[in-house]
Amino acid sequence: MSFASKHNHEPKFNIDTKDWPYVNLSDLKMDHIYKLDGFYINHKSQFDPAPVFMTDKMLVNMPSHLTKECQLILENEVEIAEIKDGKVGFELRSYKDKKGKDRLTISWVDI
Image (cartoon, rainbow, N blue to C red):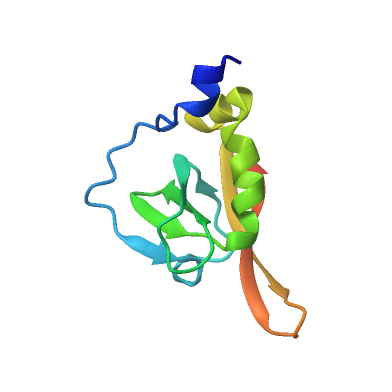
């Protein structure tokens, strides 16, 4: 990978999301597989940087614990191609955090 291609930050997914609403994980259905159309890392949040997934004509705010994994995906052209080819999805799963509070995250799904 050349220096320029590594450091010039062009969008990896050319999807027009202009009229898509932002939703939270809690707005999605359990026991449903969502096809991942693309994503980006939101660095402009008042909180830690976090991924925003593009799926079903909506933008889904993801938990910040997925940021590092999503950054690694953005560096992998094979995985980017799999997403663009419609081969990657996700579904909700719940878990208890360190304080015993119920939380939502995702599990990756091969489509």
